Length: 144
Image (cartoon, rainbow, N blue to C red):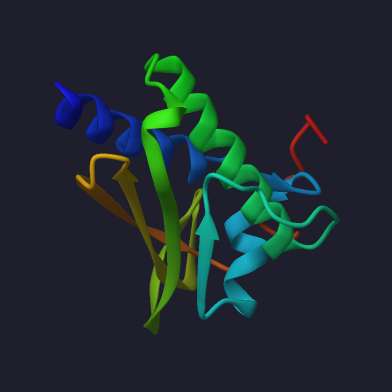
């Protein structure tokens, strides 16, 4: 039972975290972050420092969205010993679609892992194409 629940939590977390609803000052967070990113490791249990800046916001949003998915699944957070997200920019640039436009960007690999108090580990991943933020092609979210 835990396998299905934990894999669902991680899949749903990765889906919501990489969505357009993760933003920085009204623009997609990862478009702003990709230019300055090599690898970023995020503790999903503790949100870390407060403040501004794309990397800090990436940490805060990840911790919030992870906790939301754990709560939606009614999974006791007390059973989670560790939860981490690694975001890695793959080295090769490539062309891809960002909205309606073909742009040059990178794939970002998102790897989430959870270790329970029992010692059992769960891992899920997702790769997303990200073009660097360019206000000529992007509109600011109305939520900003």
